[in-house]
Amino acid sequence: MRIYVAAPYGSAARVREVHKLLEAIDCSPVSHWAEMATDAEHLTDSAARVQRAMWEVNIQCLDTAEAVLVLSEETGGGEMFAEIGRALHMGRPVLWTGPRRVLSCYAPGVVIERCLDDALDRLAGAAKAPREHRRDYMLAGFRGVTCPRCRADDARSAQFADGSPAWNCRHCGAMFARLSVVA
Image (cartoon, rainbow, N blue to C red; front, side, top):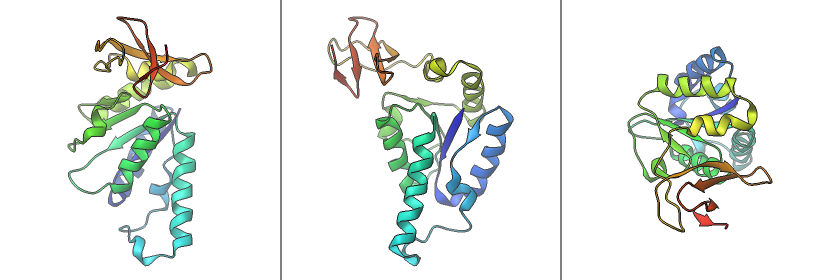
């Protein structure tokens, strides 16, 4: 299972250690930015074409991920928040660890884990599940997605017929994505 690790650039060494932990549970880390990072991020020191190439690598890696693991810290992580937004827009599950809480933590598809070990346990279980059930496994037990039709807080992870991610309200049966009722 392909996992993108989103973290502040200054945490690249920690991300490389997390990559080893992911490999130990049969997950493939695709956050190549951390492998290429050498020191503090100084975007003003590089040419625009270099910055664009770095962005493209991040996007390509993120787009191949089946899930995103967030390693939040009290400060930093500006690009990390853009990556999380993209992952949520694409319907990728996001497992959030660390002390920093922002509004994105409470979006449908985000699970706030108590610690990194809990997130790794969830990913290890998902990696063993059939591909079509991995998203459900990662979001199992997740509550708090409000149905835009009936306002019940009892939606569960689902998929539309075309395979795109969705939520299904257990109360009224509505299928919806990105908080808009599809009917």
